[in-house]
Amino acid sequence: MRPAGQVALRGHAGHSYLPLLIEKIRGCERKTMPSSQRDYLKLLLERYWFAPPVALWRAVELRVLAAEEFSRPILDLGCGDGLIADVLFVGEEPIEAGFDPWWEQLRQGAQSNMYRHVQQALGDAMPYPSNTFATVFSNSVLEHIPDLAPVLREAARVLRLGGRFIATVPSDAFRRLLAGYRERMSVGDLQGAEAYATRVDRRLEHYRYPTPRQWGGMLAQAGIRLLTTRYYIPATVAALWDKGNATYGISEDGKPFYRWLASPRLKKLGYQNWVRRQVVRTLSREWRHLYEMGVPEGGVGAGLLVVGEKV
Image (cartoon, rainbow, N blue to C red; front, side, top):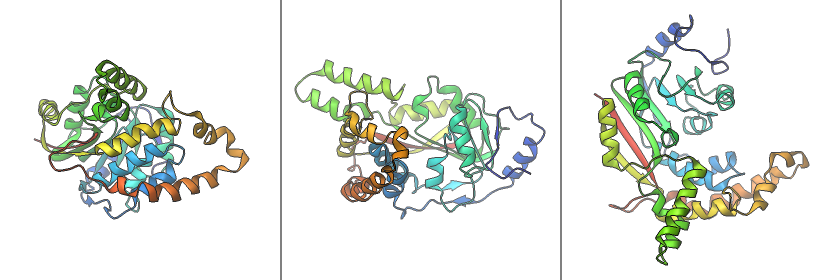
């Protein structure tokens, strides 16, 4: 018998052993509450020391998600390498299922032992029976999907009646909160601001930024009722994230030194553990107020939490 989380299945639900697994998943009815007291900033800097702005964004994201209740069984839509689930649900039993279209990412997800079952699949053809999951969860995935409607329909199909759809995405304010956009707009350069945001869209492969109202309409068409939305990543944090992508060499026009310093090809030189420790120690202190900063009441942020319920 293969250990849980070690096997990545490439086919569909026709596999002889998959129905047995689904029955076990269906029988798993309990709730998981991530810890809101966990230091996600430090944890993510440990994991993403080579890309600190990514760590900051993800840390704020997980702090917001930690306030949500995840009823089991859980499906991680676009599970990737399992890192986010590993940090968010650390100490919990493995998530029931996760899928992703990218084989290398999925292989790492299987090795993370955070999933009872992982599968290579596309979001518009989820390899699970209808009414299987109590929660479908997706972290920073939906913005990368060109045609989202069939994916939302599939999410609704595999959810049980009353099941929760929980997603984090860039918000409708994302572009205008970028430091590069705001700097150009401050001198009246709308064309330059739009061109800058378009370059960011292209680099990140973002296809859309729906408003909360638009999310309500999109989910309703799929059979999911919007319960709430919540902005996160306030303007100050979004600006630092954007500038940080250049400082740490993440963006194409960024400074290359840190990217070179953190290159996997230089790992054998033995200094990167020291760099990682310095990054974690320094930025977990200097960025603490940014990590804890909320969006002012009535304001907007660059990220959006979307929570819905299958009806």
